Length: 170
Image (cartoon, rainbow, N blue to C red):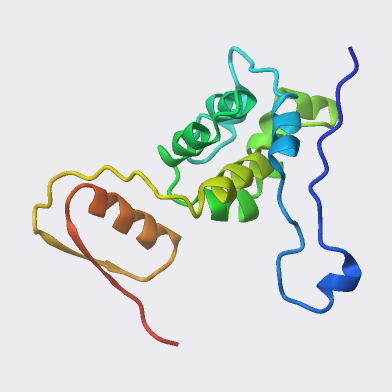
């Protein structure tokens, strides 16, 4: 059976995109995400996870997409990553998880970052189920609003801390 090509992500028409500052890449539709996820071999020992700096269970979240369980796939990513909408766009997957995908040897790795972005975009405006521990009323300061500080603030808030985020105005 021949290996299927990656599913192309739609982009804004160049004539339109020169008139705005919107994203060029438009993201996958449900149908496109299902087609791309169907290419995943669900390897018994997935090397893609070894290529992920935050150790996301890539096999599991893609398996959930294959089953049409988008919400569950999103929360599988959120177990390790507070910002899937950002990392699905800016993480250099082609040098990390996708480079470690067994299909990369044939030049056609799974579009892991695009699938991560799809799940994040699909769930972004839906009510979130954030489980938090009982508030302990212990104040904690997080200095700076970069990704590390925001991730720490989110994790501390989930653990019941009273988080205050400080960022200098430029």
